[in-house]
Image (cartoon, rainbow, N blue to C red):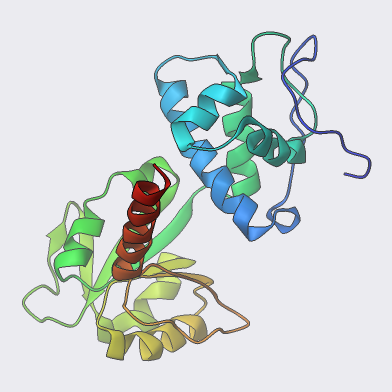
Length: 231
């Protein structure tokens, strides 16, 4: 990776895209790479074979130079006057972001938010296989939702190792989240996507991503207010 030149689109032929491990990617860059992957997959499904950085940038509101700096992680590849190889870049991004395989995942909580999440088709498309739901409501336990079983929250320690799940999604009340997160860490869950409106304590054996919808709306309101003032 030393003496690496920025990726550009002006080489004479497509170059092979090297492997980049997630440990080489700063968190902010990883977030943008995830956005690139999402858009590139849309283009790929639409039959687009090559794409220029300005087209990708226009879709995401990013500059050409930002995209080229991010893609410099993968070396210099492209084709003169044509752009980046969409299929190759999708493969490279999925490998770098760890989504080129499958991740067994569980959902904890089957309230309004959990019920919406269980029906989200994007998880499966990106390699996240939802294996089970864990819930405290006895009227929901023992049912199937879109083929996914609903187990009692009391059976976490019994069921999760059998499911070989490594990721968990929390969609539960704030007061319950820290205790459930601790239990999940103790039985081998490696990462939590936390929708509970509370920041979970950092734990060395557990990766945590907090998603607070109210905070995201605050960010949106800030962006709208500043956009209006800048016009």
